[in-house]
Image 1 (tube, rainbow, N blue to C red):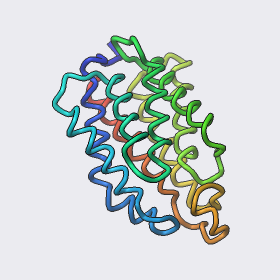
Image 2: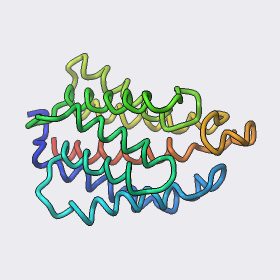
Image 3: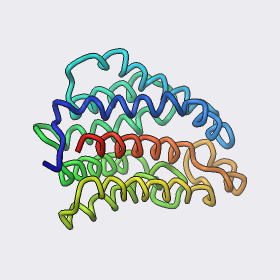
Image 4: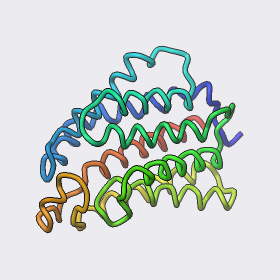
Length: 212
């Protein structure tokens, strides 16, 4: 079956945790170039809190996303906590009641995360934010889902689209957040949120692909 069991989905969340922990310093360095440098630290705090509380429990993918989102929303500093918290909690709401998660299900969940985010932030593609990573990733995934394509192939295409989106932020001028004050001086550096979004989507793609 081209799907994985929701009940067995904790492995995906723990892959996300590991990816953030391993990239804590990198995200701090990227953020420090045009921001306040705390993105890696804050993300690591939130994901590590999730691991310590739920990493050894029998928790499914959807419920885990909701709990991870709540931690990020309420317990870490910076602007990215509410942003990622919203994405994950909206994904969880869209996946509520699922026993197995296939391509169409996951595409719908990720699309809900993006839609929820765009209800609370004004950022659009081209504004040098994580939307530049997440939006093309959602587009790639939903396009393959509409074609009834393979889940693994869709995940690979999602990951590739996310990488292109992340890289595109290097040549953009920031229009939101602290870095927007720099104007043209923000050009030439990746957006930290776009970078962390790629790290998470890549971890998701790789973990899910191993289990399909």
